Image (spheres, rainbow, N blue to C red):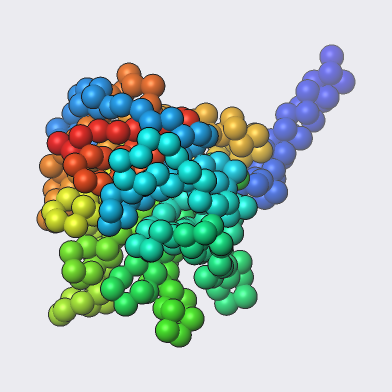
Length: 353
């Protein structure tokens, strides 16, 4: 009996030692972070079925975002690197080209081509013939690990997000389980070929858009459910503030309609991520699990919002029973909103409210 007890006690000690030591070698070197207040689906975020009017445009696997040019022609990109183009009033999509990576954020160059934030290849340009040119894929000798979204000012400078310096596109879940907050907002100047770090320390830097007259730039911080603003012009140039925070979802892409509304896609709800914020050791241990199991911890949603110039929610569009979910982008174009998603094979189409 004493021998058995010694074996059990020894096994218990070994188990405790492994639990204590394993996080040192975990894929995610989890750190403690504090989740901001989360209102949940209450108040201006109360549940509704306003996305039930959504219609679908089949395109192919995982159209993460949609771009619109000055003729209202549309562009989107798929898993596998394909970039598609549909001229205004046309029905069929044409293949414009392939980046060979994973194109995410798209912006028209107004000449039939696109500027592309490619999570794998970096900051790119694809011309109207499909020819791809690399604009930037490294900074200070280090590869840009996760270029996510972009916008361009009237001087041709490109504002873009580098979601994580720790994990690439195939390891998104690990960045959230680690919580090391290494995302950045960057700016590329074609005149000097230099990249400037505008904001660092973001918990997964995501959507990027310029405000009215290019007075400021907004960048979504997905992990903390908020949007940062950096002033670019006027007396406040160089100053930062929070444009909107305490969002119940995880803000992905953001687009300005050119007038008075910023459209924000929220592919999942924050609750499940917030729940494990105080437990870094647990998160480190969980990070040994396969990525697809970690991704299953997310709580997908059918959820987009419109925010006015004062950072107030003026549109709340949901339908949590809708099969079109995990919405990652909302693009206003003409009198419609075009919705992208990483979990569907179609683009969503909705009249602008």
